[in-house]
View 1 (cartoon, one colour):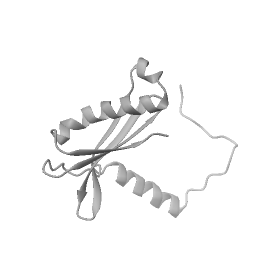
View 2 (cartoon, one colour):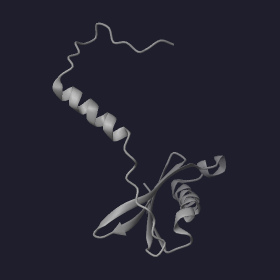
View 3 (cartoon, one colour):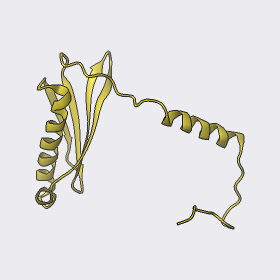
View 4 (cartoon, rainbow, N blue to C red):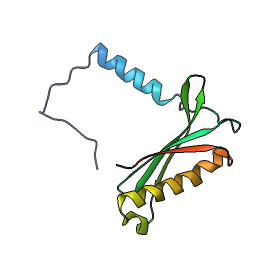
Length: 117
């Protein structure tokens, strides 16, 4: 399969603004992710969301007045759980992500906030 090409569809002009945006994007892609190191002495908050059988979450801790992410999670529910009603899928998603987050929380205090719909 060859490269993608746009022929005859539009006129493309590479401006200074586009070059600047491209350079900023390249720079952002090589920077480390904005994750803080977890502090097991502080409580954690795990934000959980489930949609179409996929559990996603962000584990955060307070750093001064702001919240700082310490972990991102994404897991696919098993085939049985995928067939459950939304409220039960949310429970399954929470169980999966709490289990994953324990690698960082080490069993410390963790509040779970769940978006059901």
